[in-house]
Amino acid sequence: MAIDHTTVERTAHLARIRLEDGDAEDLYGRLNEILGLVDQLQQADVDGIEPMAHPLDLDQPLRPDEVTASDNRDKILRLAPAEEDGCFLVPRVIE
Amino acid sequence: MSWEAVIGLEVHVQLAADSKIFSGASTRFGSEPNSQASLVDLGMPGTLPVLNEKVLDMALLFGLAIDAEVTGHSVFARKNYFYPDLPKGYQTSQFDHPVVGKGHLRIVLDDGTEKTLGITRAHLEEDAGKSLHEGFGGMTGIDLNRAGTPLLEIVSEPDMRSGTEAVAYLKKLHSIVRYLGISDGNMAEGSMRCDANVSVRRSGETAFGHRTEIKNVNSFRFVDKAINHEIERQIDVLEDGGRIEQETRLYDADKNETRSMRTKEEADDYRYFPCPDLLPVRVTDDDLQRLRADMPELPDSKRARFVHDYELSAYDAHVLVAERAVAEYFEATVSAAGGEAKLSANWITSELLGMLNREELSIEHARITPQQLGTIIRRIQDGTISSKIAKQVFEAVWNDEGDPDTVIEQQGLKQMSDSGELEAIVEQVLADNAEQVEAYKAAEPKKRKKMFGFFVGQVMKATGGKANPQQANALIEQKLEQ
Image (cartoon, rainbow over the protein chains, first blue to last red):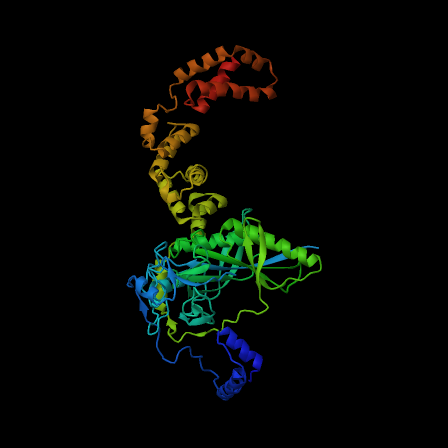
């Protein structure tokens, strides 16, 4: 499997990564090298092997349904470039 | 040319847990903005999500309730997209291994038709925060209190064929989640949100047409209207030789129309992959066994039991079991009414539910207890009061005027049991209306029935409704024949 320039640009857009001129060319080559390795992996015989969802062979621990977190509002709002009335402010987004 | 609509629903149910799905932050509604956003909800570096056991139990319980495949193995995945109210840049959801697999539920339509509808899957996920577009001087305010609130997304098969069936499905889901106690199902507060996938095809065709998705139709009434509107719109487009674009549409309740939100030309590509921060979830048979033991009696079995044990009509039983609290109220009333099931059902479905509806109250806030209603029914049965007076007693109890027996006593509402007294009143009424008596006697038998009613009415009026109707009828008839 190999990808073309359009796929590189589209993926960058989906990931909100800004590509400068020439970046796509460079990435195109490097990504295809990685995909070459993936192709090699895909040749491995995995018949009868259950797909793995996580490298650790453990089950998800659970926690009781209890409220343990305290109000961090003042601290977290201090991290924001802009805030008002307890809300984070961002440039207007409306569809 | 006739058309057939094909409808599937995606319903998000907010699970009634105290804390969030992956963090110890509170899920309480209506708190100060961002006061319930924990470091995990914000996706701060170095934090790890840990699954809430109650949320998992609730999802499994739902799976058992719809006879679904519950494999005991599920995996969380990241659904990647960018939006300011999604702090991590992905929503933790489930993709190819949902907690609940294929199941089904039964709906009953108003005409009594029953239909089984398929449920494709149900998966656990976290909610996003809230974007507030008003009141921030041209900016958008972000409140992340809702981020991480546990949701169960229930995806139906495309098994529905009309807006009415979609509403029946949604009502049934609502009923089941409330019976299970896993959600309050409050659509106005967003505890239950519905997206509808709608397409149409010519009758007899088996392939599906292009579908549109209608977002956020958040009341039972709007689901019906929005879907029916969209079906008509699609038929119009196709009959005019046009084609349906696969797109997301928004329902505008004020204008009763759907309009395009965004076309899916650039179909969303969420690049799902297993969440490395969460391990696969494993549920043992013991867990499932424990949950089965906790399972309450569900609406379908309750309905069957009501029909069988109480000899109710299928319709009455259907109405009574929709809400678990109403069903429980009914059973308590029957036992207080000495086993009088049919009268209890009638009183609850007409008087009580009517009253609650008028006053916009839920059954928990009824101002008459099952014991009081049961007493009223017993007093009708033992002839103390007539059904008509019973309504008066019902309203008096509702308005805090006392217990039924006190009201009957204090307001002198007992039926006249003394036939001598009633006889005197009947004679008086006939004497006062001598002209009508003459007319009655001269009338042809078939016209008499209506005229007879006049005398009954006068007697009831003279006794303030307290005459026993059978006794009054008999006496009037007897006197008129003389």
